[in-house]
Amino acid sequence: MHIVIIGAGIGGLSLAQGLRRAGIDVAVYERDRTRTERLQGYRIHIAPYGCRALHACLPPDVYDLFVSTSGQANSTLAFFTEKLDELITLNTTEIGMDTDHPTDTFRSVSRITFREVLLAGLGDVVHFGKSFTHYTHEADGRVTAHFSDGTHATGDVLVGADGTNSAVRTQYLPQAAHRDTGAVAVSGKVPLESEAARRLPRPFSTGGAMVLAPHGCSGFLAVHEFRRDERGRALSMSPDYGIDPQLLFDNTTDYVMWNVLAKWEKLGDRKAVTAMTAEETRALVLRTVADWHPDLLRLIEESDTGTVSVHPLHTSQRPDPWQPSNVTVLGDAIHAMPPTAGAGANTAIVDADLLCRRLMAAADDKDLTSAVGAYEKAMLDHAFAKVAAANRNLEQGVADNRFALAGFRTFLRLASTIGPIRRKMTTAIAQ
Image 1 (spheres, rainbow, N blue to C red):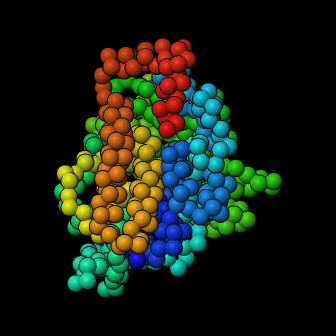
Image 2 (cartoon, rainbow, N blue to C red):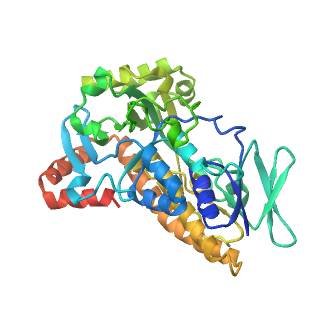
Image 3 (cartoon, helix red, strand yellow):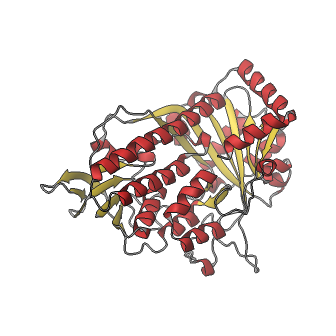
């Protein structure tokens, strides 16, 4: 069996690792010309279910590399008003979660480091500079991927792991188009050692924190603090851990990441906003949330403009059933979602684990169509539950409804005082 994967992102590389670990021949084709062409410096939040799926895909030494190069484990999720009044803090230690457990805990990882980890040992598997154009089916039932440079690759199964604008999905499932949510996230980073970061309440330093604000805006903040060796070097950069020392951008400094979510109309004309410089974008955000607590405004104001960016938010709808074949898709290629459930990367990893298991089971009887169909059913059920949660959270975060906001704040304050409810909420986020 030979599997062709289009896209060397989180899902595609997790699948490649799992297949290779199982002894299944695999090749990955990535349009980027080099492994460092697109360095994305923000953190990725890996939940326990994502850790378990990743553990199943990666060889033990590579998973150990993932754990050792991840940041300090997150243990809390807090909710504040825009005036920094604490509503509730959910602490995983209250339900017995061990932050040092290899899988059943939350991980915060640098995107740059994580991609290097996922590439470990795949030097002869990943082919860069290969822009996929279309696929064709051969007379023997196999499928061939064609690339813009005139080359091609043939395999028994073709997997589209090529992101939100997936060319594989466009051909395979043209009815499964993604849609614009009409909302946007603006983000930036501040060094953790800065005065602005140190002034934030303690829950901001131990995990993620939501800012529930009025007027159709909300915020999310999270800390990424690297583990360090005895010489104080970030383990993400230590040559002892096999990380390319050239990957310096955004990969050595502990930081607080902030996001402000809003409908586009809250910020202004979309074209004008996306054309702004980073300084202009930061100033626009400050004007938009001018009634927030001065410490939050100071955090935004002190952001390195090199880290300020605008992210239009997209989502997807579950497509109608289709006839499975030896072509399939995973991750953002099929179920793009806003970041408001922290589930995008996690769900792509779960997809990889699900598909890997199905292909392993089909390795002997070669009933690949049934294997792909079983994967697609399980993937759709799992992934679109996460999409629905992310959509609900986004709608709540950008809704300009002061009565609903007041009711939700009241509920959180009450839940904070009732142990069983608080622990039930904590258990729900820890699944």
